[in-house]
Image 1 (cartoon, rainbow, N blue to C red):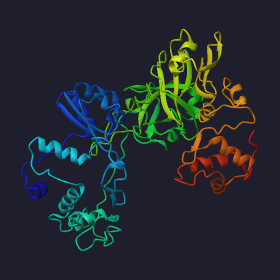
Image 2 (image 1 turned 180 degrees about the vertical axis):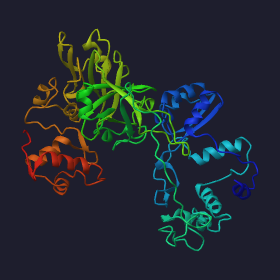
Image 3 (image 1 turned 90 degrees about the vertical axis):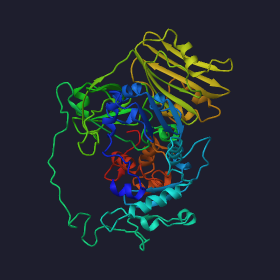
Length: 538
């Protein structure tokens, strides 16, 4: 603090550390903090005990949010919304976990009045009357930052990029990636640290810190007998405010889910594909069950991405316990005691429609996904509709005279199926049943890409499944090349594609980002015996 004060010639610096995230929102709820500025995060979704975060923001007198998406779970509480730039609109540097600094070049023209975060901060500071914020570019800020890193630094601090402090604007523009430290006279950077055996401690010797294992803050008990682990899935990022807009990324995991070990599924009477209520001391969500050996018995996994923009009751952060590490403040995201019970509403169904649904009643539970050329809704409700046929038209917006409708109603069985065709192409379909046992959605989703349905396809619409000679690509495995699970299985079993290399050459799957390779390899192992593929229909 004293060093920074001398460098900035500013005696008025904070005298103690501020509150960490979880503690801060408790202070907001206690009305000890009356104004808050949130940047580059969506805490109503991502923080533990997320319902408490909502309560806190409800009480906050002034909430400012810098965001590049108009609607998120957090912007809904904003009093002032500032238009931030997206990653591709920004200009500056980024540093990765191997200490490598890279120039981030803008490749998109900023939309509207959007501005970089540094510009917004500087403008607010200057309008509050503070001098020293008259930066004209990210280059000027980087140069000052680099100078500070080397100020009164005789090798006592590892972070030192003072060698880059004198870069001209042109040199900064052409900066090649480099690993810090980058000291004066050593502009090539430092590939490896500690090669001289000296460390950044007073005596230059390494220190070992004894670690004493401690149990989780909340242990399992009869009411909450399972451990909830949260984390990411392959094709989504954080709270989906960006990736949730991509139809291609939605194909693999189109709705929120919970992975359950078969032993636990049997114990708690949960079936594959049905809805389950997952609850903790702090909240509850309703998710689709996936029964898999990937999870250890006694542990369930639910991804953290889904939120109120894409699902009515799937914010996993509402479950997570708010215990934090006493030093770092990191929440205990990987261990929350939970209970799990089947959720069996009066009806379940799905809606595929080219037009976004304006109303979703009588659905009390819904998820929403952007697919290629359509919206995909999963629905469930406690109350039956008075007229499913009328509701299908209202939900899909396909009530115009040019729309052809084909329908099937089984009142005694609680089943309805309706499809809308406009100018020969599929415009919408609504499938309703008493439980989760409905046709897979993938084939119907594929039909929306066709300008005209074939006669055989029209005949199979209400069945929701293709004829034997029609292809159903299945759930997306390779998002880069839109290769489905059934396509891969057919290639393995019928074409003898039993290695990652042959699948890549024939189907392209796994040849771009490579994140699907483990799933492809799992399919190879499942559908081959001693290297020989089993028949596709066996």
